[in-house]
Structures are given as structure tokens and as C-alpha cells.
Image 1 (cartoon, helix red, strand yellow):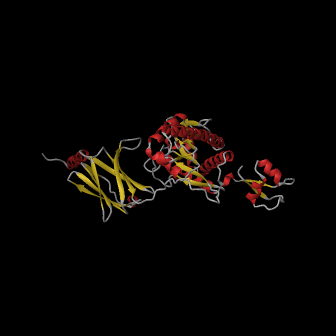
Image 2: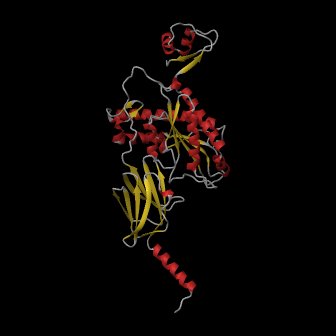
Length: 432
């Protein structure tokens, strides 16, 4: 039987399609570079059997995927990120493929499969942890120093999601991870201009940080406050407005149990108290007190921030909500999560893309932060150093009585040899 040209081509295409469908299709790869690691995500049509091993001189990772076909060219600048210099591919054992990652230095690899989620299908994930990267550790309190220098307040800013996790997506394709990072960076710049404040970014670029790790990064930097920035989404496009959340009491109690269950936490410091020499009952009581006090502080902080955000955007919830968000579970840092808007609402999506609106949101958050610290002075910080400008009719004794400090302490703080004051001079008020 003689086949026409069109029929022959159709049969060839069907044969190729059936041969591809017989195994797994590896469609594409994406790379995300973080300071301490690099993540490579392969989009696959179905779960795969794979093996992974390392080679040295030069450093490289070899991934063998069984019964699979590659339908994308994994070459170009987009595959040169972090520790990965380039990706090479080839056939392996007739029906499989071999993927080689050429590396800039030695790494500790880990691979796992992810099931379909939202807009993503099956994925093969390769995490490459940099070997030799120095991690910031929480150090024990230093012994008393003769001269104490006042420090800045440290504000940890957490831009939600990142990397392979885009967060919610708006009608126009706006990704939550991008707009919250824009607001976070504006907040960072505003804080850096404030006397006595310093901002720490939990993630500095487009990469994912685990929820627990976000908390640990804040603790490692000895943060005085943790602010996580997000953009909400809902199936009803009419939903709109800003919300602020603190940790729930139930979340606090379960977190106490988790901290006590982890042996690594024995050396951690909760409110300046080491738990490594305490029995379980006393440690539990100390943690409960710390967690409950932290939740109350977080609710107060949330009230101040929400009050300011009302001037920048419509409010979705008039009171600070409470939920067991993982990023709010530090037992020693007041922590809030700010849902800046509903990205699923077309009007609010446009606002989130507007740099001026992003700046308004950042300024509102900062004003709430400053109000909180004005009511909750942190000893030893620059902002805890009160200042008083001399006006007509005042003398040193009256000022000491006003601030409830001793005359001697006031003189010592300002290095005054005499009681003579000049109108307009500024006195530093010691902590009472």
C-alpha cells in the first residue's frame, strides 16, 4: 500500500509523540541563586526515577534520569547563576538522559520531587548548598564592658515568597513576590535614613527562603522587630484592603512545645535567659511567658502599623488578626505580617505596581514602627536616649525631676561641670 506524503508525515509525528509519551518529558529548567545555595528546578511531565552523584576536578553534579526525553535546549546565560556555570545534557542508557551541572566550587547536593501545585506541574528540584559558607551564629551575651556604646534598633524585613514560589498572581500577571520585594526595598531605604535604626533584608534577591529559616535569619541578626510583607488573594475579585496579622495564642502554645522538643534550642536565649541549665518545667514556663509577652507586643505593633496603613489604603480588617503563620513564630521578636492589598483585585493590582503607592505603604509601616518604639524604648539603643531642648525658665533640677532621674546622672550623661544651661541647648536624658 502506497502512502501519501501527508499521511506519512502524520504517522512519523505520531510515532515520535508516542515514543516521547512512553517516558517522562523534561521540558525546561529554572535557576535561583541565593547567598548560601542555588536551586535548579526541572519541569517534568510525570514523576521520574533519578540518581545523583558528584565529581571533582572540575566540580560537577551528574543527574541521570531514567526513561526520559529532553525537549529543551538548556544552554545560555539564564543557566549560569549562583554556583552553576553551565548545564550540559546527553543520552544515557538508550532510554534516559544525563544532565551535568558544571560548578564554580564544591557543593552539598540534595534532590527531591514536587507534585503539581497551582500553575506548576511535576518538578524535579536540585538544591546545591555551598560548602564552606560561614553561617552567622547566635553568640552568647558578652561580659560587661566598661564603656557601653548605644546600638541601632534592628528591623528585619521579610519580603514574602521568592524564587520558585511566586506567591499569588494578579489578573495582569503581577507576581506577589515582585511587588512585595519592591515595597520591602523602599521600607529598607526609609529605615536606613532614620537615626538609630538599621534594616536587615531576610531575602535580598529573587530566591526562596524557607519559613523557619526566615525566623532564624532574624534571630541571627538579633532583630528587635520582624515585619513580613505580602499581598493577599481571593477567588472573589471584589475583595480588597490591607490587613495586619500577629501570632495566635494557639500558635504560641504549640510553638513553645516545638522549641522545647528540639535539642538544638537548648543553647538559645529567650528574653536574655539561657535554657540549657533549666529543667523542662521551668524552661516551659519561661518560654510561655516569653511567647505570650511577644504576642502582646506584636498586637500592639500591629495596631500602630494598621492605624497608619488606613491612610494609604482601604482596610480589609479593622483589627489586627491572629493566625499561626510560621514566620511569626519567633519567641523573642515582636513580629507582624502585613497583607498590603488583594493582588486578585484589578484596582489594587494596579496600585501595587505603582512605585508611588509602594512608597506610601512603606512610609505608613515605618510610622507605625516609630510609634511602637516611642512607647516601648529598648534599653541600650540610640532611640532610648531621650533628648531635651532647654527653654526659658528651666534649670537642671527641674529637668531631673521631670524625667525622674538623679541630678548626678544627668550631669554625668552630659559631662556638665556646672549647673549653667543655655536656652536652645540639648540635654541627653539618661535611662531611669
